[in-house]
Structure formats: C-alpha cells, structure tokens
Length: 297
Image (cartoon, rainbow, N blue to C red; front, side, top):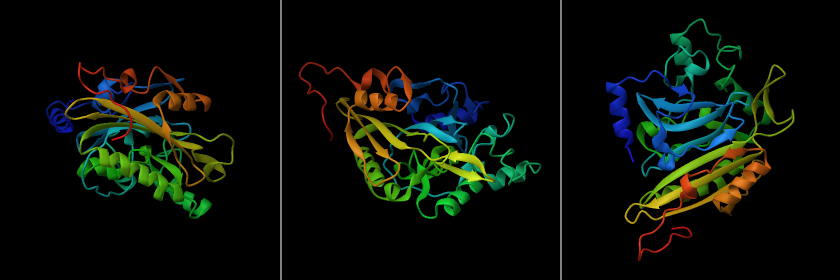
C-alpha cells in the first residue's frame, strides 16, 4: 500500500491539476486493493479530499441532496485534531483552488462571492449557513455527523475530515452515543490491522426531511447511516469484513451485517452498487496451514 506521506511528496514535486474529478485516480490508496464501488446512476462528484497539499481520503458526493454518498479511508491510530469547518472551492467554480478551505478564506480569495446567497458557494454543496440553520430549525435534535470521523486520524489527516462534503445532519444522540462507540471499536482494530472503511448515508424521501433556507430545501437529512469495513492482519494478511446500519432517528445500530447483507440493504433502499463494496468481498485465500479469517478481532 502506498503511504499517505508518499502521496504528499509526489504532490509537492508533481502538482495535480484536479481535486474533484471523474474518478478517484489520485486517491486510490484509500480503497482496498484499489477497488472503487460505483453507484448507479453515477451522477455524483468524485472528490479526492486534499488538505495542505496532501490527499487524505475520498468522497463520492451527491450535489443534489448536498450530502456525501460515502467516504472511503483507512483508519489511523493517533490523536485527533480540530479545525474550522471547510468547503470545496471547486464545487463553486472549477477554476478555483484545488484544496478545501474555510468559507471565510474562500470569500477572502474571491471577494465577488456572496456569503449568504446559496447560488454562489452553496449551489452544489452545503455551507456553514445551512448547518447554522439546522440548529435553528431542529434545535438540538441533529448535529454535524462525520462520515469519515476526525477521531480515526491524527494531525492534518484529522483536520481534513472537517469539510462539509464529509458531513451529514445526524441525529445527535446517535452521533454521540451508539455511532461513536462503533467508531471507537473500528479505531481499536487499527493497532494490529489495516482497516479500510466505507461510510455512507441514504437520503430521505419527501419534502419534510431537509434543512431549509428561505423556504427552499438545502440539505437532505439522511434516513440511514451505514458502514462497511475490511480489515487485514498486518502480519498474516488474513482479512475479515462486516458492516452496520443505523436509522437516523434513534440511538440504535445494527452491526452484524455481512458485506452481501449490507449490499442487499443498500439496494433495498435504492442505493444500487455496481459490483462489490470491496475487492473480492475482502476475501484473501489463505496459504496451506493458515487459519481462515472469520469473526471480529
């Protein structure tokens, strides 16, 4: 696996001209064996999440609902860092900067932008003002829900998760309790395993489950959260997998899914995946005498 440090060095020597592109060619290392699960219809934006000249993870982004479809990353064992919320300049204008930045920084660099008018910064993405409205509209029911959590990384990689293209409105109790505990379990595996993760959201249907501004729907409040994981022993290279789902209305999580069961769940909720979530369903054939991978660590 190519290290993120190597990717940073390559970016410094060979500047990359695209941040969100037609595919994930610049951040393939965050997908197990380079296998990218594609959604049908594939009308979403591919974002290689870039912060301080480094790629840190990948996001498939839904510009209609203004929430991510999924984020793909590798869990790190380290202390997380905080940062102000950021937006994606190239979702405002393809000629803008190729890295995430705060909304204030974006306006400073491009003073003709209207920070309030959704047609400027927020035409294709959620903004700070949308999430401020979330608090006003729903009080303390929902908050910023990371798909790729800051707690699964350290330093700049942790700060990079603070982009609104990696965020959904998540039920606060779920986010801070059961979902957080599940994230902690995955992080605990990172000491002995290489942990590849896909975390996604399923949009709600209808007109009621939205953050609204000026009587216009702005950001969809997901009906479900889901996670798929593939983790491989750093010594034996044996791999295991699983998944979980949570309805975004209560503090409850179903965490006993196989990958095939999770994919069936996604398709039941109109999330059609082309192929598999992970390469060969995260299965590695064992050498003679090696034990088969099964269950959790």
